[in-house]
Image (tube, rainbow, N blue to C red; front, side, top):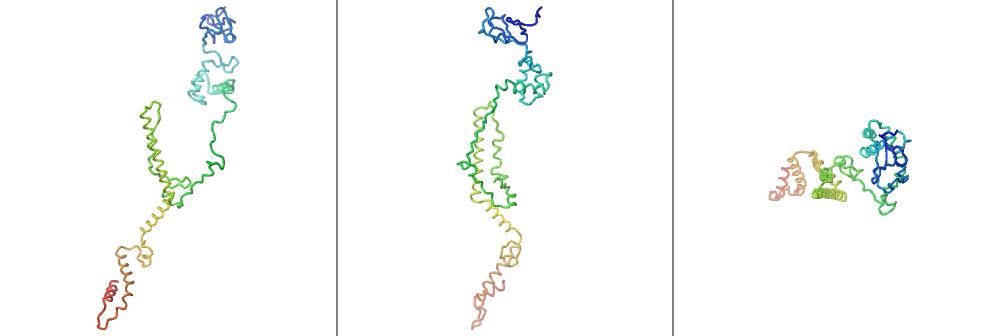
Amino acid sequence: MADLGKKYCVNCLADVTNLRLRCTDCPDIELCPECFSAGAEIGNHRRWHGYQQVDGGRFSLWGPEAEGGWTSREEQSLLDAIEQYGFGNWEDMAAHVGASRTPQEVMEHYVTMYIHGNLGKACIPESIPNRVTDHTCPSGGPLSPSLTTPLPPLDINLADQQQLGYMPLRDDYEIEYDQDAEKLISGLSVNYDDEDVEIEMKRAHVDMYVRKLRERQRRKNIARDYNLVPAFLGRDKKDKEKEKPGALGVIGTAVGVGGGSSWQWHNWIRFHNGSRIRPCFQYTQKKDPKGREGAAGQTAGSLSVHG
C-alpha cells in the first residue's frame, strides 16, 4: 500500500517527495526531474507547459553519492552565509547553516563542491588574466624613471637638520607650511544619500586642500631653488655669535675688551681715535717764537688728556 504522505511521479512512479516539477497548466501532473528533462508527455500535458519546482528542502543538489548528505536548504544557507560573512569565516558560516554542521565540514564541502567541483571548473577559469597594466616606459624612454634624477639633499649638517626638522632622505620637513591643511578633508565622508549641495561643498573642500598643497610645494621649490635654508642657517649662526659674551669682533679681541659694557666700548673708541690723530699734531707741540701754542697742539693735548 502506498504511503499517503509521499508524492510519486505520474510517469515512472518514482518517489518525488523531496523534489518534483509540477505543471502549472495541468495541476495533477507532477514529474520527477528525469522525466521532466526527457520531455515526458501524459494526457493533455505538453512539454512546453509552464512548470513550478516543488521541494521540501531535503533533496541533495549533488546527488545521493555526495558526502555529508547536504540538503538543498543547507546549500542555500551556505551560499547566503558566504555572501554575508565572506570566504574563510567558517565559524560564523557554520552557525548560520545550522548546529549540525561544524566549521571543518562547511569548509571541506564548499571547497570540494563549489571550487574544485564541476561548478567551480565551469565558473573559474584555469588561468586568471592579469588585470594590472604596466604603464611604465622602458629604460631610456621619455618617461623612464632612470631619466629622473632625484634632487640632492640640502647641504646642512646633522644638528641643523634636527633643529629645522628636515629629513634629507625624503627631502621633506616634519612641520610643513600650513600644517593643519589636512583638517579640511580629514572629516569628509561620501554617502549615497548626500544631496547636491553637500556634494558640491565637499568638492570645494577638496579643491581648497589641493590649493594649499600647491602653495606648500611652491614655497618648498622657492626655498630650494634660491638656497634659502642654508642661507638662513648661516645668518642665524652669525646672529648667535654676536649674542655670545665677548663677541665684539676682531677689534674687540685685539684690545681685550671682551664682552664688557657699553661705556667700556665707548672709552676704547675714544682711545683708538686719539692714538690715530695724535701723531698728526706732534709738530705743533713746540712753542712758536712768541711763546704761544697752536690750536692744533691744544687739540692734541686735549685728546691726550682724555685718552
